[in-house]
Amino acid sequence: MKKNKNIFNNSGGTYYRTQKKSKGILITVLFVLVIGSVLGLTIFKLIGEDKFTSKTPIVVEPEAEEEPLPEVIEVNPKDLVKNANHIHEASDYAYSTRDVRNWITGVEAYEGEKIAFLTFDDGPSPQNTGKILDILKEKDAAATFFTIGTSIENSTTSGDVLNRILEEGSAIALHSYTHVYEKLYPGNTADKEFIKDEMDLLQEKIREVTGKEDFKSHVVRYPGGHMSWKGIEEADAYLNEDGIEYIDWNAMNGDSEPTARRPKDPEALAAFVMESLVYTNVKDVIVVLMHDAENKTMTTESLPMIIDTLRNEGYSFGILK
Image (cartoon, rainbow, N blue to C red; front, side, top):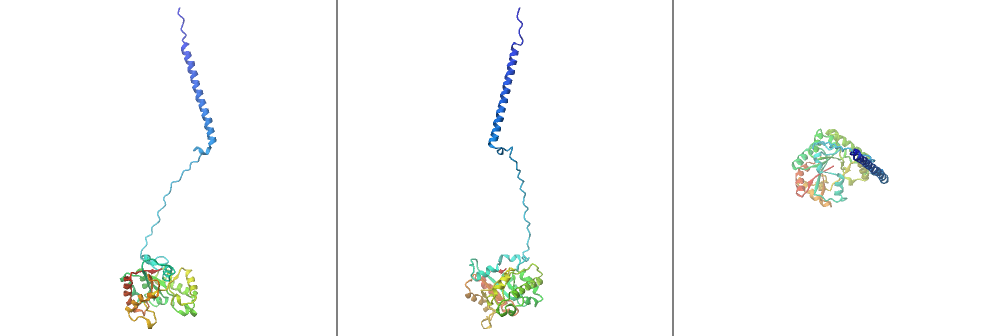
C-alpha cells in the first residue's frame, strides 16, 4: 500500500521560507530607515538648522511698482519765467549778471564766443523806447532796459511798453525809482536803506503797470555807476540778500558823455562803441551803456549801425538776468 503523500511537505516549507524572507526584508528596510534617520539628524545638528531651507524663512520680494512718469507741464514760450525779468523764450541767451560782471572785470576768465549786452538806462520813454524795440525786432537782437520809477509814472503807455520789452525777448532791470543822487548817495556815500527801498518800490511799480505779479528783476545798475560812490559795497550786500546783482559797463556809445566829447551825430555814436573798447582788457564780452530817455533820439538813430557793426565783429547779443 502506498503511503499517503503529505500535502504540506513542500508547500509548508515554502511558506515558512517566504515568511522568513519577508521578515528579513522588512527588518533590513527598518534598519536602513533608522540608520538613515539617525545619520540625517546628526548631519542636521552638526551643520546647523539654518542651512536648510525648511528652517529658513521664505522672503517674498514685493513686485516693484512702476513709478509714475513726472507730469509734463507745457510752457508757453512767451510767458514770464517766474520771479524773473524775461520770458521763457529768452532763457537761452539770458546770462547771470554776476557772471557777466566777473567776466568784464577780469575776476573770471571768459572762454566763450563773443557776446554783447546792449543796455539802455533811464526809460521807458514814449519817444524812444518803442522805436528801439522796433529796431531790435528788425535786427533780431535783444537788450536789457534799466528802468526808472518816475519814467514809468510819466507815461500812460509805460505798461504796454514794458510788456512789449518782455514779449519781444528783451529784459527789464532796475535803475532806481527817482534817480536823485542826493537821496541815493548823500555826501557821495551810498544810503543802503534808501537804495533798497527805491528798488523795492520800482519792482512793485513794474508789477503794477505790467500786471505781472511774478515779475522780479535781479539786475540793478546804480545811477552814476558802481565805481562813483563811497560805501557802495554795503548797498551791494544789502541788495544781494534779495538776490539782486549790480552791473556797470565796459563799452558805451557816448550819449551821456560831457558835451565837449560827446559824439555829434549817429554815425559818431556808433563808431564810439568800438573806440571805447580801448579802455577795457576784456573785449570778448562787452556791456554797452546807452540811454533811451526822451532826449536821446540820436541813440535810436545810431542803434542799427551799432548792431550791424557788432555783428560784423562776431558778437551775438544777450540779456542780463
